Length: 405
Image 1 (spheres, rainbow, N blue to C red):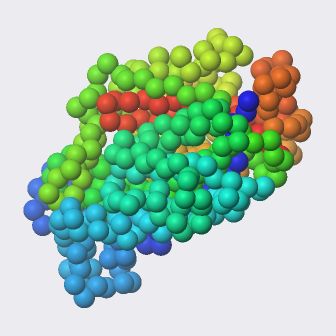
Image 2 (tube, rainbow, N blue to C red):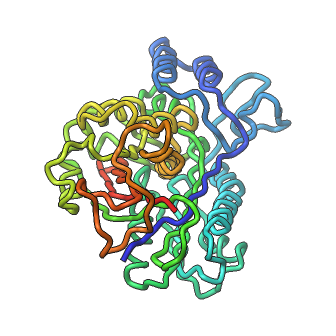
């Protein structure tokens, strides 16, 4: 049985944060020490980010607010709203992102409609409300009231992986299942000025974004590239519990993102991948660079650097992660969905002008009995290895196949 991510849609809020402008705002805040100011400039400049997006309209210089709560554009001062104020904005701004990305993903899934959806999985670690986003999707999209609903909350940057793994398991248990996965993270709700290095690093990286996907094993024609969800693995590194965390404070959620995280990933990523790649005998013993595509969660530039170097990947294989980081920043769990979307849009290896790879002639969606080529790939397909990192330190990995229509 082949479980496919049949459609994928992404979205960002309308307020654009230009990295250089954001750097200057944070560097000009009252109360920063000389070291704090230097850290702000260093972290923002080294982030390899050009633009990010925020659900906070006050961050736009073009939209002055009479009674600002997050940012006073008249003075350039970052404000310190309560956790309740931040969460209230999450409810207002996240709800339409959950609903509309889910609607677009369902509209894009040819051959499937609202009446077909059997499960809804929503994901976020940046806010809470109940009845939650899973409920709102069912109501707003006109899904059947008997749809099974699940919300994965407060897991961090890797949470899209357990959501997709659960979707795969639902479809394997019921071949008629259609699972709608919707992910929204509004990380900028929790930014603040501080002299703390972890807080400064988070402020230089985090952004807002949303994504939704339709997952099913139903035997339907493919009209667009899709991703086969082949295998998932989870591992905890033996160190790093104190280097990445996400806590609730009186003035918003507090991110702990230690500068040692890239070094922990560097030391343990090879071992974390071993059980995943062992799931496919065709990949056993092969160099990592022989896998066509790598979907790396760009938690930061240095994380991508460490993964690429340790695994011996080419810079072409790092492009989906680096370009996602450059254009959108780190959107927590939504980010890997943007990386998947980038990979889905790449030219096929055998297309004119495309990069070399193991893509083969046009074929049908992969099935259990479908023959493989000598290098292990299904006809008309390319392999994708994905990974994300989060509190714990948790490493989530996945093996997928990009399938052409």
